[in-house]
Image (cartoon, rainbow, N blue to C red; front, side):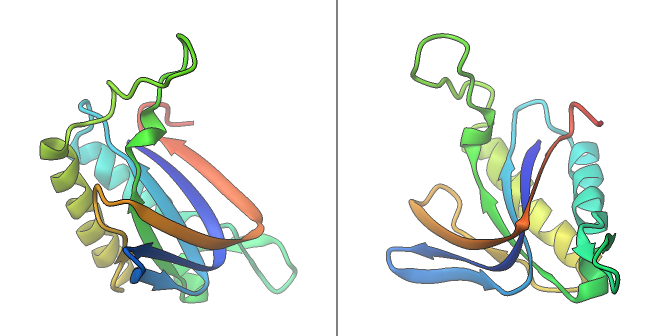
Length: 150
């Protein structure tokens, strides 16, 4: 799994002009799933996302996690995170999981993040043409790949 986590002061997702998910302060998480992903990857990533200490404390240092500031999560599925660009200029998405694998993993991530945070997770719609808006706070953007646990 790959995730792009952006610290936001607000974010929203629209499909066909209708808001499907909207948050204030928190994380916009773009999530890509590949065929090799397991439940272990999902659990590890969910813990990592919710535990990231990238929100400012009283001294302005990044010491607070999502729960410490009462933040929310907007989770968006994004298979293009597995784009391969080695050959030519047209990306290949062969590593991205097909919907029969990706949809259950995405839905499980929604449930897992909801369980960890105790909050409803805002979402887009899997496979839809989504219009995602955000105000990146900082900016703070972190990428995590479960196959490269740095």
